[in-house]
Structure formats: structure tokens, C-alpha cells
Amino acid sequence: MARNPALTARSADKHALYQEAVQDPAVDLGFMARVYRRRFGRSALLFREDFCGTALLSSNWVRGGRERRSEGFDLDAGVLAWGREHNLAPLGEARSRIELRRADVRSAGSFRPHIRSATNFSYSVFHTRAELVGYFRAARRSLAHEGLFILDAYGGCEAFAEVKERRSIGRGVTYIWDQAKYLPGSGEYHCYIHFRFRDGSKLERAFTYIWRYWSIPELVDALRDAGFGRVDAYFEQSAKDGSGNGVFRLDPEGRTSRDCAGLIAYLVASR
Ligand SMILES: C[S@@+](CC[C@H](N)C(=O)[O-])C[C@H]1O[C@@H](n2cnc3c(N)ncnc32)[C@H](O)[C@@H]1O
Picture (cartoon, rainbow, N blue to C red):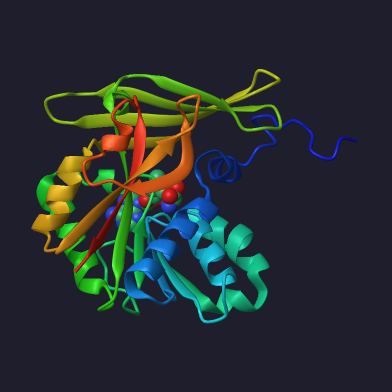
């Protein structure tokens, strides 16, 4: 039997596919740890993962050193249970240094994080500016004196076009990011993740996001209004074929990404 047989809608696990398709803990955590070290001249130890889902970042964080701790927040008991079974249980000793909480991201945590993250644009669940700024205020209040709040952001003209992106993720699976609806007056933004399989089976709307689209300048303004004294933008650089290359450069105005149809940036905010 083939070691990695092609998957079908029946045999696939949607959380495993999600992690494979849209998460890259080495890139995210590598960037965050590096920025922290450069800013404060020491290593970050305490990590808080908002909207943690399966807690893939938290799990990788605690694996990276015996003094590292992590706390993840998510409202969905099902996804947290999946993360406990598949990402936390295999950690061994490091399992004791990670706590998952079924709670709103605006809740207080048990420590003041050196790095607090919100990835894959998850703050877009906040549809009003008041809610967004309220969340950012809670994030700022929670940080250690030497702490960073780091979120990713989606920009460029393709960000709010009603388009589908298709990508093969191996084992006969195609990942589809479906930007199904964008209302230019309100910023209402409906997106889905679908998976299609080589045998013709499908997982339609495996994940649904009823979001508000927040542009990068809107996010920077909201972070400042929440009290952050410094907000730096790092834009992903492009490979020759125009796709992102995983290298992020400090670039307050996004000059290095002007030709990019769809682009990703990290916003790094500090007190
Ligand atoms: C797009 S997924 C993010 C998963 C993962 N962290 C990532 O970066 O890919 C968004 C997650 O946020 C959770 N969520 C939505 N609103 C929330 C809130 N107010 N507080 C905590 N979690 C929330 C959902 O349950 C879902 O698991």
C-alpha cells in the first residue's frame, strides 16, 4: 500500500487539512521571535495565541525551549479538543507548559505575554471599529512591559475582489480559498475554505468566515487609537512568480509591495 495514499472527503480530517493549507508555524514563530529579540535584546518566553483554533502555534512555541510557556484562547470547544488530541498530547514534558482556554480573546490571561499573536486575520470577526479597538485595548493592557502584539493583515487590490484561489496541498487534495462576497460600503466580507479531492469528492464550506474586511491602514489607525505607542508594518516580499516568499521587510508605507495584487503584512505593536 502507498505510504501516503490520496485522501478523499470521507478519509480526510478538515483540521489537519487546514493546518497543512494555511499555517506555517516556522515562518510565523521565526518572525515573531526574531523581531522580539531585535527589539528587546533578549528572547521572548511567554506567548499568547488569540483565536488559537488547534493551537498549532502554541504547541510549536513550547517545543522551542524549556522556559517557554503558552496560553491559547478560542471559543470553539470542538477545535480546542482536536488541538489537545493532535497537537498537545504528542508534546510530552512540554505539554505542561501550555494552557488552552475556551474563552473570548478579550478575556484576561494568567500571565503577561512577551508576544501576543492574532493570525490568519481572525480579528476580522469584529465587525465594528468599537469592537476592534476594544480588542486591541485589551491586548495592549495584557502585555508585559517589554511585550509585542503581532497580527497579520491582508492587503492589495485582490484582497477584496470576489475571487477564488486554488492550490494543490498534496495527497490529491486541492485547497480553495473563496472570497465569495465583499460589500464595498460596509466592508462585509464572506469567505469560505473548500477542499476538493482527486476522486471527485468535496468538502464544501469546510470553514466559513463572516467577516468585516479591515485594510492595513485601518488596522494601524485602530492600533494607535487603542493606545499602542509604536506600530511597525513588515511586508512580505515577492518571489519571481509574484507569490509571497516568506521574507518580511520593515516598510512603513508598503513601498516594496506596490505591485502586489494580494499581499500579506505583519503589524507589530508595542506599548
Ligand atoms: C481563522 S481561525 C484561526 C485559526 C488559527 N489560529 C490560524 O491562525 O489559522 C479563527 C478562530 O477564532 C475563533 N474565534 C472567533 N471569534 C472568537 C473570539 N471572540 N474569541 C476567541 N476565539 C474566537 C474561532 O472559533 C476559530 O477557531
